[in-house]
Image 1 (cartoon, rainbow over the protein chains, first blue to last red):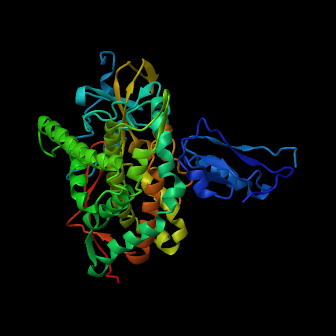
Image 2 (image 1 turned 30 degrees about the vertical axis):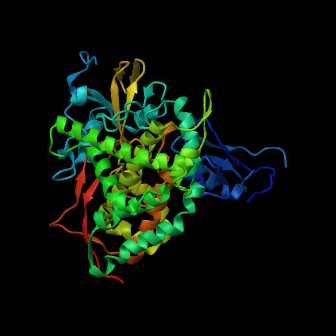
Image 3 (image 1 turned 90 degrees about the horizontal axis):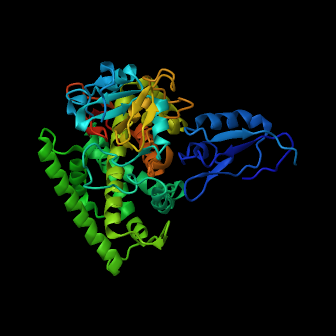
Length: 77
Length: 409
């Protein structure tokens, strides 16, 4: 599922150099982050509604490699 | 190995292959906790001397730095008569093999196996549910990963016993035997399994074996090496299949057993799973955390300071993943089983480039097993006069686990 980029909506960012493909993130929130055929995460939601911000923070927290971060809202939209 | 400047308090009497760590009673985690209390990195004189990394932060650092900490040798004993591939290769070489294997074990491909795995689980439970008692290892925890993995690889279930024996010997040697006896047995086991894989590889290459199994896919997948594209050689294939066999058969068996042991001992936590199957995924992560099977090995490629000690180039290390998972600096009340623990950044599958490639399959096997067991046998109990038998070594596990429960259909 893709959501449209909106003003003031944060998004999830994956640092691929840190990611080791644990898969906890896409297991927990498949509508935000999916897996590629190597098992690495691909962010599929360009942005996430502000009211799901807690869920984004939880994703960031669960990563054993600390490879996830929340990208602040962008101006495009 | 230079230990002259090492303070006495950092030298510990600990050998991961010492079976008294698990028998007659499993004290592995208590012993690991004692090491962790001494320091993040301690030293054992066993196996020619090696460092033992005990805490989460340092273990994570070692696993994420393959340039400084080579993964060969991964084992303190010569389990595979040479290198296991790809775990005992370092980047960049390791990366070529890893990228070729990874898509074959991807989360989406493993998810497609779910209906078949659930069927196997229910067939196994059907065989003992009405009896009200079972020996959980031989009737379930050993059988499930064996059947799933052999079907995936396309290896005959009739040969399961041979696979079990050879991998048991590779990991544990001859229990109670001398080091020489164990070494001889390991060599014979490796030769036997390499001969067996040789026949499979020859059959696929000659076109005699035509089924599209994971084995055939691995044999036929061209690998992009630094110097061009090629197929894996016969020997590379044997060393890869041997590793996959050990990883596929042994680790899930242990985790299934630990699930039963810890949940039977924590009925309140178990009730949460019985009442709400949505809790199973988080519960699986907590089961993985509370007892990690693997003790990984590394060797320093340069002098390096870590956890307050100086490790010299060429020094051997082991990292106790089960100890990282009980580190109070990372986990609140680490000795407590909490099926809803969050976050739960356990290191049971390792970390960094060698992180377990089979983790997606393992999670599915554990999740579906937990769902069906708690649906069908929700009140399983241990048998106090016939307690579980566990074993140490670099892949910890469980050999025997009698349980009773209210008979079910």
